[in-house]
Amino acid sequence: MSIFKISKKNFITFLIFFQWLLYENIFFLEPQEFFGNLFVIIFSLKVLIPFVIFYNSSFQVFFIKKGKTSLYIFFFFLFICWSFVPSIIYGNVFSWVKLIPVFVFFLGITSFFYNNYNQVYLLFKMVVIYLLISLFDYLLISFFNFSFIGLINNRIQANIIYLPNFSFPRLVGLWKEPSNTSLIAFISYFLSNYLYNINRNKFWRFSSYLCLSAGILSFSSAGFFAFSVALLYKYFFYEKSKGIFKKIFYYSTSILFMSLILFSLFSRFYFKENPTNNSLISLLSGNKSNEQDYDPSSGRVDRISFTIKNIKNNIVGYGLQATGANGTLPVPGSASAPFFWLALTGIPGFILILMRELTLLTMFKKVIIYDKNNLFLVQCLICVMSQHLINGSLMDASYIIFSSLILINYKKSIFTCAE
Image 1 (tube, rainbow, N blue to C red):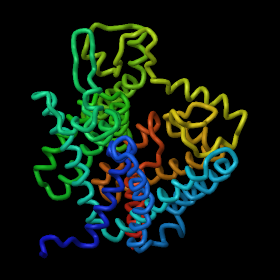
Image 2 (tube, rainbow, N blue to C red; image 1 turned 45 degrees about the vertical axis):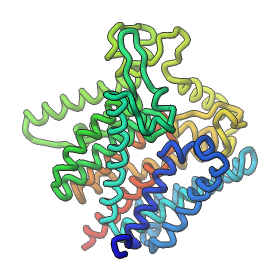
Image 3 (cartoon, rainbow, N blue to C red; image 1 turned 180 degrees about the vertical axis):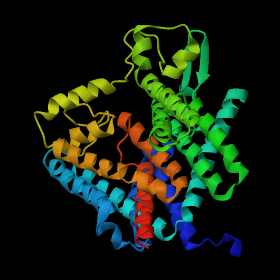
Image 4 (cartoon, rainbow, N blue to C red; image 1 turned 90 degrees about the vertical axis):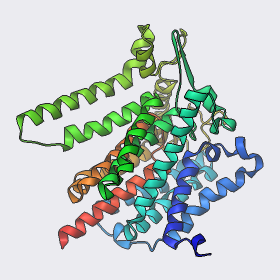
């Protein structure tokens, strides 16, 4: 019977992974579609699990006493408090309440991983393996036209790009859309390298290449943008060398990644006005249609413009509420995290979320100096933050996990210096 026993630490780590799945897995992300009336259970778990984790985490008070970690938590907490004001006036208080488990989840995993940092490795392994399952399913589609995931997720069949002379499936797997898959695939690439540097197990080196391939096979311009920004950070802001040849290599590589960033941001617009017969270029740019009325930004530019224009009429925001097809928001909800929160929490909320992120950015250098392997964690967070500038909320489980790890390593570096 002992083989069925699981330690308390592993159980909490599995809970953290499951909470991450609630934000990532398509079945949990769209529970009404897949579970019908049982969706209430899914939402209940999303609310309750953070409190279970927090209860078992032995909260570390020094995170909120002083320094940049306390400043980050202060801006986070103040943002949630402020968002209640427009929510109770114009929005939906129930939607606001959902932010509380997010904050509790952040506090819980920050304390848990600080006390049990080895559990981070288990979490990373589960994320990478989870991504590889989707990649395996993708290979089945490509070579045998069959998908286990596709039996219950019709988005698998829907995400095939049809170009004049070429058609190609995009890797979706267990996510809602390819851009989500791409983000986790590129994150898994960095996590695999992180794990390889920890134990030198060649499986993780090999898996890093598989994860990189998965990110590319998603053919998401948002994913390419996020990955390029993360690589640019390494070569332009971090890699330093006195050797002339290494300097030339690093700066040339930086220019390459800056070019990739520009390509991922503007290629859709360019090829919309200047169509090309090159199927591969069209595929990489993310243009999925040749119709004249096709919007290369998928409405993102229009939503940002609407948000900026309408915030002048209501500087406190419209409060947290449903922003989708069934929402009542007076302006279309922007997919870009900063403008999404600008619309909902107004200028005060926008400033608070911006200050929170700027505080986090200032920790990167010390975290990497403390442990060079942490560069991969920083790159994971850069991937998340970059993609959320296009499509995201800066509040999902991926963001919470990696931001907490940055705070943990920053605090450890402070204590090490003090010794």
